[in-house]
Image (spheres, rainbow, N blue to C red):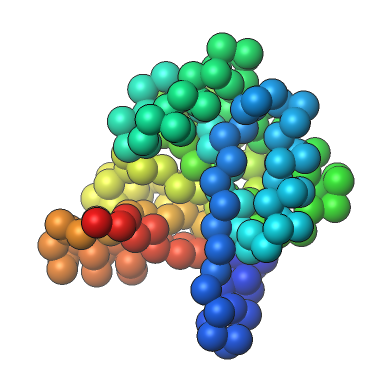
Length: 179
């Protein structure tokens, strides 16, 4: 998580915006994902949000839904996405990489194994759009134990109390949805 925190701190000091680029793991193929990560970083991305494909991504728009389905169709899994992180690190990618995915596949993988494998691969944190902060306790415990970020969401319609709770619980950054 230190890499993630340092990126946001450095950009805040420089009064620069942190650019987070989203890439769907396995789209257009697993073999091309590391190259896309490298290209995004070379083009100025500060942080990579690496999407773990899921069959029912209700929080995503049509483009990410389509790329996720295409990746699933070619066999991309949570484990394969964690392997992509390790490959990116082996290829010299130093930018923070956060895994964005949904509760069901992560729970199927097993939270302890998920966070341990992600840490070992070189990931910096998790973004889980369907995880409310009120149910995030076990996830936060694993994030802390693995020294990984865990971002929660704030939406335009969120109550001030929910925004405060999400902000206080987030490790790394608070994910703020646009209107």
